[in-house]
Length: 237
Image (spheres, rainbow, N blue to C red):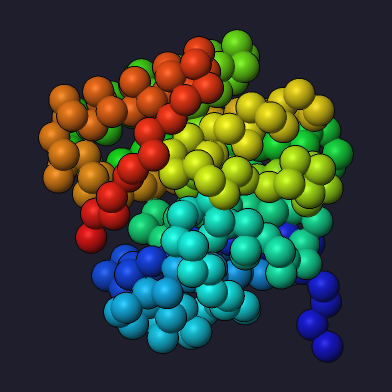
């Protein structure tokens, strides 16, 4: 009989057939000394996302609301682990990542851990920018509690998540930053620089640098200063 998982990894999906297998393989190959489960929370995909996911996932649930926050909450609702880890379906996770992102929580030192994001398919300039600007800014933002968080790389103690009632399901953007900011009021949050993951830049390349930076900078500032966020974020496939 398989032991109960210590960690539950939740991956929301919606028509991610082109990317999800690479992500799930990387999640299955994590080097940890505890049991963990992979949960797919699908938003009624119309491609073969679920068929691919069945080869790797321990559980698959359906969330018709289709916001990523609602999807993450639905996945968390069937989780058995005492630590919840939230990922995305187009991200690559290095083998030591899960240990690094969960250890501070398992040891009882922190309630939330977040890590940096690096380009998966970036050019030289994009790679340098992520290392020389985004990485140190992640430190600074966490220190100032002016969090800048990627939903691709969040771990949180299940009890904290339940106390907060999870992600705000009505938020379309900044739901990840919102969760961590609310959590910081009741627990310690750690930025773990070694727990970096590699994200797809398909949206950056589709929108262009200027439009992408303008959108996310405004959204970030509006959330922290005005408690307002954009209500539209169309999928890029």
